[in-house]
Length: 181
Image (cartoon, rainbow, N blue to C red; front, side, top):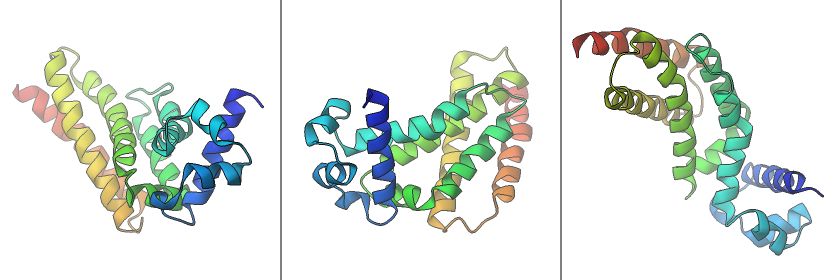
C-alpha cells in the first residue's frame, strides 16, 4: 500500500469513528485495529490522532478552497467549505466537542483567511501588508466565530444566510475601512 493510500485509509477510518464516538475516546490502538494496520504504520505517517485530524482537514477541504481562489470565486469557495461542514456534520461536531477543537478552529480560520484575502487585495491593492494582514485576521476571526456558532447551533441556519452575512461583511465594510485609513 502506498504512503498516500495508507494516510487516506487512516483518515477515512478516523472520520468513520468520529461520527459515532467522541474524538477524545479514539485511541491510536483502536484506530489502527479498525483500519487493519499496525501502530508502527500509524506513527510512520502521523505523530498522533490530532496530526491525522489536521491532515484530514487539509486534504479534504483546505487544499480545495485554496486552489484557484480569487476575488471572483470567493463565495463559491466559502460555499464549498459550508457544504463540507454540513456533509461531514458528525465528523466536524466531534472535532468541535473534543480536544481537537483547536484544529477545527484553525481549519475554519484558514478557510476564512483564504476567502477574505483576495477580497481585501481586490478592493485596495495599495494598502500596506500590515493593514491587509490586520483586516484579514479580523474578518477571518469573524467568519470562524460564525461557523462555530453554526456548528454549535446544529447547522439549523440556512447556508444562504451565512453566505449573505459574509458577503455583507466582506464587501461593504472592507471598502469602508480601506477608504478611512
